[in-house]
Length: 237
Image (cartoon, rainbow, N blue to C red; front, side):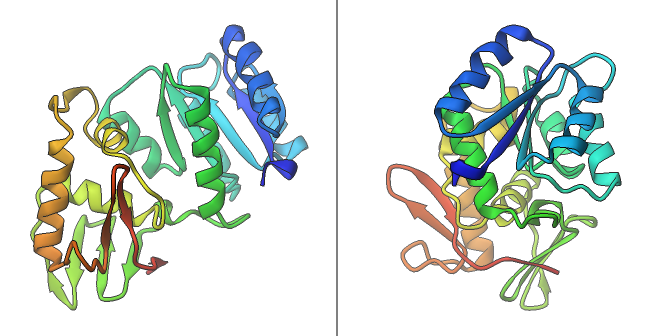
């Protein structure tokens, strides 16, 4: 995959671009850098990157404004946001606005490479990602993201807010394995409990409400020693 992948790395911290750009190049990507959002939009228009990795907190134009500007132009280049702000509301808002993924600083560069490859595997060039769709459909399961309502076989389901958020995240990224730590960090943020059992409890809630068998899952599969994966085929409603 990486032979033809062009990564636009956007960050106002020179120490980060100077260390991260060579690492991404060693991982097989072609890399260009930009120091702020204005430069990022210019580079996106002229270079046409395969994917953009963009800091959130930057002068002139921040990362979320970059996302909004690109999406308003109809540009659905996959984009991963980087930030030191580890708050669930911040991440949810950014994903709702059209970012494909979110990574909190500091992070392992290998994790970023894994995220880049995962985002590109689920992306269709030029098309909005599943995670940006108003409605997600998997068989008889329907998730309406605008109204925050879920139906199964025409019957509306009652879910706790955290279980709703977890289902939305998994459905928007089908086929990917998500570790418990990753789900805890992404969906719970700084306010998460000490144990990843919080994730297990919400998965158990989803399975109970969905009537999903952990042994022969229709929707959520447990991947031994790794985490969880949404196994049903998901389309835009």
